[in-house]
Amino acid sequence: MKYGSLVIEKKEYVLLKRLMNLSGYYKDNTLRSSVKKLVGEMETARILDESEMPEDVIRFNAVVTIISENGWHKKFKLVLPSRSDVKNSHISILTPMGAAVMGYAKGDSLVWEFPSGNQKLTIENVEQENEPINLNMVL
Image 1 (cartoon, rainbow, N blue to C red):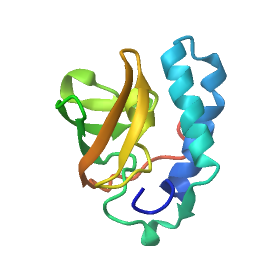
Image 2: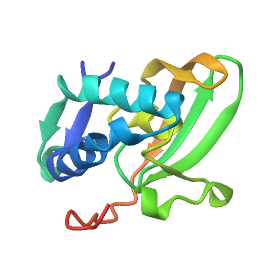
Image 3: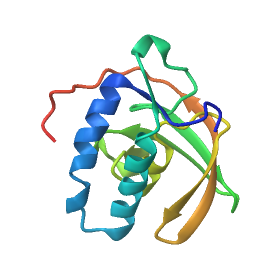
Image 4: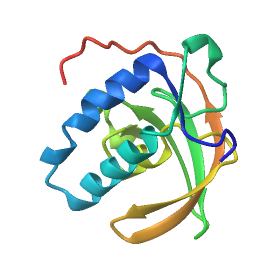
């Protein structure tokens, strides 16, 4: 990992914790497993102020391009569950793919469990859209 651990902005960390607290209720085993892995990684994450966040770290509303060891490319925007729209490549943090990449940086590689099995992914590019998130939203 480029920064040694996940890097997460403070407000986004608070929101992630709220979302992860619901993880025991997810019926899908793959999603539940992905969320548990993210929760584990969050325990050692570097939590930074907005002004300290590197531009190449995946955050809410970032546009991410990944490639897999199998050769497929995927470009998507990582969003809150309420803004998920798969047809328009808006992927929720509460999907295996969304949980897999949160807090990683451009150039990082990771292995994540998907319904089809483990996949090695590499973060090819990260573009920030810097849209504010509402911490008081109802989940």
